Length: 534
Image (cartoon, rainbow, N blue to C red; front, side, top):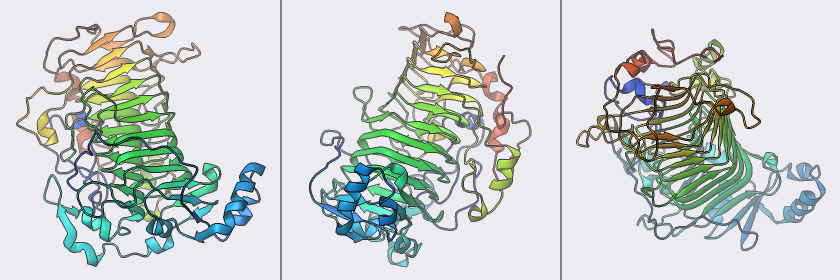
């Protein structure tokens, strides 16, 4: 796999910055060399116990700590009356000027109330990185030769990679016992509380084995990798949050369970707005993470997830990205392969035609990271501009009752990924792209009934068993466009067939993409805006 970014000057679980070959990029690798590493290079992780967790509720009572800045009073007096009264009442209790300091003082079940202001977490920025005190706590990555910070590293040096770290397993048994059920909330509107990264630390907020973490009512911006990162955590809630201008991910969860994304707005991120990777292993018996009322736009990808399993994604909007949603079974070292059992329903997936590979973007992205305009998206994975939804090696996913329109290349893209590319050469060759169902979706038409065609509504490489399409309709009830022209109907679906190699051979050229050394691979047609469908 070709490096997607300039090598990071520091080690870290994400520091290699090699491409997280997203669902939409996976086809580029089907006939090229096996990947060397993945962008989301994390320590070995395990899933939380599915029998013991739950999605936390936001609390309005109980022990609390108050955080403020020197200009909080001036900001408070400009608030609407009800918010002004509440914040003025809290102001005399302010005991911290940095959120991390309040986290350090918090006990289980503490609410951390953050008054209006801009929080740059200067003491965390000044922490050594890498920290010599923790170099002996590096562990082997689950795939490849790299050494990465282990959990003990995060516990003992929490601000090496993170501005705000909630690290909750004090006895190292894999279960939270310290800093559990922490709630961090802005006390006004989300725009009134801004937590700002320095574009050097990988993560702004890291919740690591922090069961019961609840985050709401604030804006995050300018991380080097993740604005919010939740890992190995059983029970989380992220609500009324705006996450923008991360160099990679707006919100990322990994080997977490019993979670909820709710009313999250995310834009301007170099990989994806939200990334529920290595989702909970429900195997179609349950959905462990719910994603609702998300508005993800202006990113390279609206939503992406290697091994994005057990998700229920509904009543959300993914629009004006380069690509809308993508799931894959590709990257080595991601638990939960192959991807399966996500339900995608009642979403609007539209106008994903943002050309983040344009000349203006390239000029900015060739600069050193800290010299770039951080509000201009620098893509970190090659994405076929104009794609609504992509399943690269996913199984038994249900896609129903969505509005998918005005994506100029493909409305929905599905293709096979061989197991060797996820580092599992002993698995059956054709163990992916099976049993996916597309039911009662609206293609090429807006909810108001206006015609807004996709380039092709459904594109399939014709591999796999049990894939089916039924009751999908186009503009004025017409049959959706597809390649192949006839798609197997539900419930029986497709009989097994290997992939049509000629259907992806023309995409091989894009595998050489590199944003610095090869931003325009000869013969690659993905990295530009396709013609608008007629």
